[in-house]
Amino acid sequence: MHVSDSFLVARDVELGAVQCKGQSFTIEPGQVIGLVGKNGAGKTTLLDGLLGYTFLASGEVKVFGHPPTAMPKEVCSQIGFVAQVDDLMPWLTGKEMLAAAKLFHTHWNKELVERLVNNWRVPLSQQISEMSVGERQKLALIAAMAHEPKLLVLDEPAASLDPVARRALIEEIIAIVADGERSVLLSSHIFSDIERVASHLWLLENGRLSFDGELDELKESIVRLHLTHPLKIADSLALTTSRVVRTEVSAERETWIIRGWNDELAAECAAAITSPYHVESLGLEDAFVEISQ
Amino acid sequence: MFVLNPHLPTPIYRQIQDQVRRLIAGGQLAPGDALPSVRDIAEAHAVNPMTISKAYSLLEAEGLLLRQRGKPMTVAAPSAHHRSPQQQLAPLLTDLIMAARQLGLTDAELQAALMTALQNPSQE
Image (tube, rainbow over all chains, first blue to last red; front, side, top):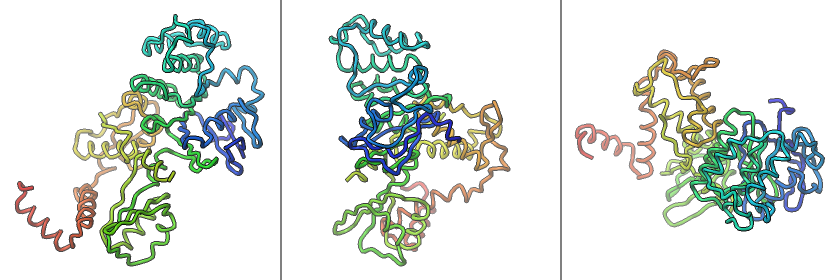
């Protein structure tokens, strides 16, 4: 893949809680990147910095080859963004708001708007100030997707959506990236959604991206190794023990939480451990909780 | 055609790989049969298309599937992917051995249990 194909390239980004000096990351066409991290980890700060809503303290970001704080109009129209707290104008009706958003774009998919408004039952004739939080979020999503941007960035898009609307949003995201030419970056605490929709994951921990790679790779690299007492270990377990992030020990058994599990470690354990043991793979939520402790 | 659960610890691409292998081994998928497109599976199951492409690519590398430009993936001819019954049984045996070790059974006890089960196949 050529670097020039990247939709977004970020280097040494520092801004508030985000301290990614020495790190670089990209968004490539076709990717759906899930941005996860504990509350206060800096997810929103990072998104704001990447899209130029805030100036970086240091570092460099290029979105479609341009610095995000000085993007030409035609580049802006390649981006869709939904903030965690919507910035809709409360005195407009839903219909007026969509009409206003349309003015900024040369391309506007009317069918998409109609489909989503109907599916999500957005009360377009109502004033935004009268709408529920969920309805406002749906309206903001529709406004951000209608011009079919190449890069769609969603900050906690599902927080106020019911499960049916969330599934509909996931299906839209899948359709958006299905041809491999558009990308989505979304932050979310709803791991079941991330597991479905994301191809890649950015894990923000203590202000840094402690993981940047394929979702599957993270899921497969974090395991619980359950061992039974008395331990019988015939040989060195140097590789495996070097990857242990935490242990839980009781009278009969102990559990090692391992980050960086792979075939090599599995082979080392199989060769060295002669007492009963069991390797438990983890879902994304469990994996996240284990490594965040 | 697939049963996919994104919330299992087993990644989706592995779930697809396992199911395709099983469908081919069981004869439900015959050589030349076409597989659903990446897009169709992604939309039907609401899962990311990249993870499905990854499963297909790995199955292609394994020799189980064939990719032809502009056509759906098809099941490869059997010579390319024939696995002996022993090879197909191997993962189940690994699971059995692991379970026995977890229970603290010796190898002799496991063998004895297997012999007993073979002689009384209807009993649990």
